[in-house]
Structure formats: C-alpha cells, structure tokens
Length: 194
Ligand SMILES: [Zn+2]
Ligand SMILES: [Zn+2]
Image (cartoon, rainbow, N blue to C red; front, side):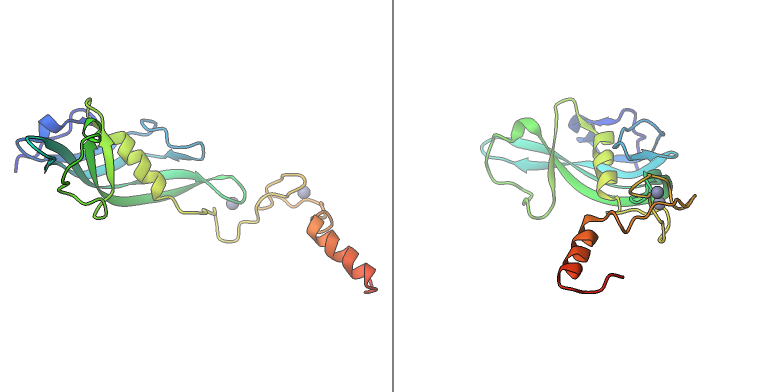
C-alpha cells in the first residue's frame, strides 16, 4: 500500500489524485487552541485517510471533494461544571466528512453526494486544514456536563469556596429568593413557621 505520512497539515486535492493519503499522526499539546475550558493534556493521535471524490457538476465541470475519515483519541483537561476545577478525561471519536472546494459552492448541478448522506464542509484553495477539522470534532465529542466526580459538591454560591475541599458557614437556604417566596406565601396563609 502506498501509505504516505502527512507532511503538512493542509490536505490538498492535487496530492490525492493518484492515491488516498493515509493519516497517522500525533498532534502535540498546545498545537490546537480549543476553547477556554478545554486543553489537550498530551499528544492527540489521529489516524485515517483522505481521498478524492469527483463530483460531476454540470457541463465539463468536475468538483474535487475531499473525503476525510479518521479516528482521534487523546487525553484532555476539562473544567468540572460544578466546581470549575480541571479534570482529566480521555476523549475519542471518529468522523467521516466530505469537504467541497469553497469556490465550487456557487455552481449548481447534480451532486454525487447527497447532503443528507453526510455532512458537507468546505476547504479553501490552500487545502483542507486537518487541525481545524480535528478541533471541531473534539469539541463535538465533549460531554454536555462534565463533573470531576459524580458527587461533586460544587462552589458555595455565596463565598465561592470549593465545597469539596472545605466547608463554609454560609447559610445557603436562606438566600435563595425562590425559597423566601415560598416562606412568605406559607406565612401569609397562616402556616406555622418552621
Ligand atoms: Zn467538581
Ligand atoms: Zn460559603
């Protein structure tokens, strides 16, 4: 098999005309900026392949789409949704995406690939930037609400202390306005106070 190692992170259609490009690489820590609450905590392994798919988009027009299929896996540091402390997790995922040249978008015609079958993205003339694709896929793979541990106690809403590490003396039941409203209601209808 003519497996080639990826030399640059931009995948160009002309490099795929002869054969698909095998991907097997490690993206180092800090190479990709994800979001304020997530960072890579070690190399991210990406393996798969990029291949060319020709779409015949009308008289004489051939659109060179890039199909990128790959898996990724690595260790990440995410912030706990309750106490906001960093917590490490392994994230992995796989994707199968089609990218059309951005210049081809204005043309209409028969598409070899139906939009329903797969997600379609776009690539610039300078090539498809692998890191951009990986970044988006990693963000999509994030859990909705990550907790450092299932019973994380979170932060005190008044003094902001991490209640996993320390206990404070704030009375958090009294300041919840919904709770006060209920108490007022109970008093106004003559219920005894607790
Ligand atoms: Zn936590
Ligand atoms: Zn407190």
